[in-house]
Length: 177
Length: 164
Image 1 (cartoon, rainbow over the protein chains, first blue to last red):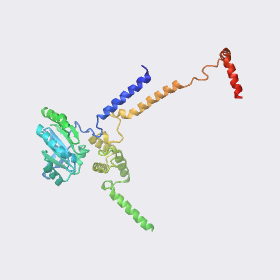
Image 2: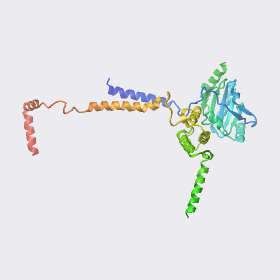
Image 3: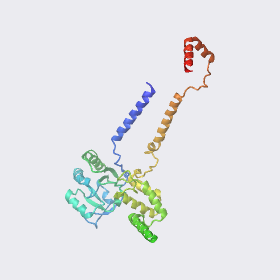
Image 4: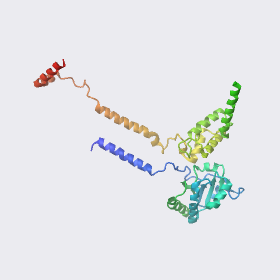
């Protein structure tokens, strides 16, 4: 075999492999910088009662989900029933982080689309969202018993993500001591 | 008349100041310069190809306010960038640091350039015509070849005649 034939062939194969790999990735979905790090601290009023506060303490001692949502977020509507299904199937509580929303809107949204949350923390300014590295709504974090972030879903949870990733991860974390 | 234009200019400045939002107020010139430099170097996370200085997205506005607050609190550019990298990853930086995840990004173009140079040099070397000084003209042999071929000589002479 002659090099002038072999080299362009190898380059072509390399390019095709690289571009093919590129097609399987979604560069617009960013990996979380917070994976395997302790959940950022927060102390926020709850949606049900502005005088009651929920803190990072709520994430300690049990596996939990943190779901960032807002009434203005259209994708969150479809996601709501899926979040409810996950908490039903795994028994893992979901803490809602109501992101840059208005209280009346958020309350009304819960009555219309259902309330899968054990508690909803109100982040009206979006300051806690920045600490959690939230870029868009919805986002969902899996937090383990020690309060460490173990997994993150950007965008509405799909059925595939729920069945193949979230539920297995949650069950595994629950069975771990 | 000049007074009218001055008045108008003042109004424009006021309007510009109020439009720039509370975040950029109360900053010294040096701080303001840092603010503009920093926000131009940080990438908006929603509209992913604009800086937070350019973007109208609410999150970009929040991040601009955050940068302004931290500058006023006396934090260095480095600390502010690190603060955002801790939350959003190195992705927020338009100028990503050199590390194990980015070495290919930084060095790749130079490696390609070297490969291209090597190929070009190789091709140039192959194509270069043999140097005229490389081998002296062997006149004796040339004459012998021409003598062996008398037909060629007469044809050449005929051509020379026609040309005149």
